[in-house]
Length: 514
Image 1 (cartoon, one colour):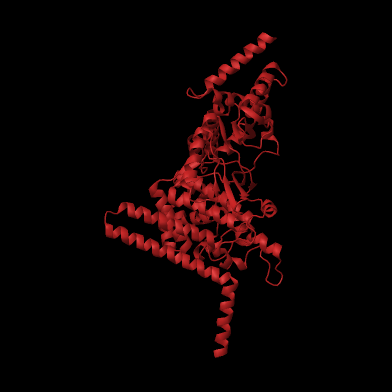
Image 2 (cartoon, rainbow, N blue to C red):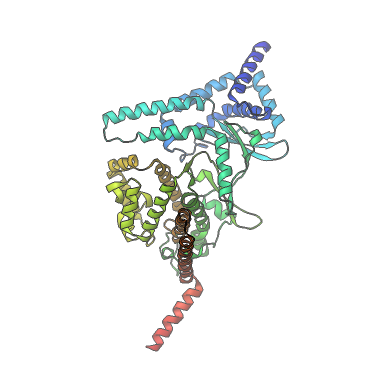
């Protein structure tokens, strides 16, 4: 019996060594082996409602959810069978965890379709998050994609108008990147450096010496999900703290959680202001990523965006997690996208049509504009910053989405592939804004405008060889940004007590003169 256990242990160690990269340290290989054991022995949590994230079904994961649930379940059963609880091999591997970690929580903090995360403490006292890829997911992924391709081809034969073959293309491109945790670590470091000027952004530090392609060790950070208003209330995040634009925007009179002045209560007004600063800062991050840098985190569902109050400053930090899926935007695409959003904000329909066509929308540009903004065509024509999203408009958008499904599939098939993940990202961000009751806020459009102006000006300067022309571009940029700042100041005065007092005084003086 002892010989059989030793032989099985030898084979398992050999397989682990074969799966590890040649240049990994012994320590990293042991982390991979031990963490894989933890994933196998707790993998059943993935299929319990407690840990399954309903938002974690993007383009790739929809196919996985359909095709591989049974396969992965079988995977866990065989993994558990190969390392039976209480066996000599199980006890040996569990004992090794104590050499690497002072403590290691078997129950995952969260689990998704590709991996799960455990909390652990290293021997030197550092608290870490250990992200572990599910057993055999990597080997199974190519079969999943093939199955998805076959199923979509069959459906297309039955329904010729079914235009979703781009799902397979995106899966082939993105899934290998998501399965490489070293790539995720590099993305995390890149975005942290890229957005280092935003002191409210926190990205977990990666511990490279203990990471592999299938196990990622990173700094442990905790907080509440960005859509958890109850958590913000309990922790005093952003109460009565709103941006200048939000205080004076036209939306303040229509905010769904804003009571009338006669019935206003401190709790209600605090609830409306609660998520505004968080929402504004999140909008700043994504405007910077999309318009200025062209390097976009494409999975901002609430489980990947946490908020926490800094004890020292009292300000809210945004913690950005899960950096496996990023979209790199080409320069030409990014410029067209900047011009399109500038046109949408200004309700310039000629330019909306021009840049929508340049992005592949063709004659479907009205539908494309509605998809980007999640507003009705009437609101797009009127100006998306002029009025909040009403309940009737939401119903209209949902009903039209079903009615125009063939046109939507045609549009998704025609636009550049870079657009697909941006559309998904936009939808996830809007979901957060809806939860925080900050949809269509004036500050979000002002921040987008600033980033678009900066991005276009930087591009124009890079293409100009004339010193005079570059100076002209810089002056135009400064004037445009100054106009936005002035408009923001106007909105603040309009919404502040001082502004209301000045308006009342001027009105009284006007009546007196007459």
